[in-house]
Length: 73
Image (spheres, helix red, strand yellow):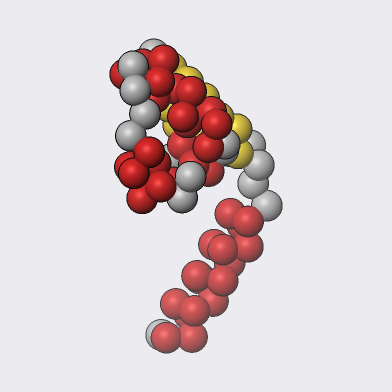
């Protein structure tokens, strides 16, 4: 059973590694969409500059500490 679990994790890792992610802004929401249609967090497809600009446009300020903690920016 352990062998099957390790194999499953390896297959999923390889399948996800080949996806290209793009940044999507919809209203007051920023997220990423993969080339296969999967939805993920903003940091998968958005640059730090895009996240920072989004925060400033929508909320009037940027919490640099939160950006560093949440996205490594």
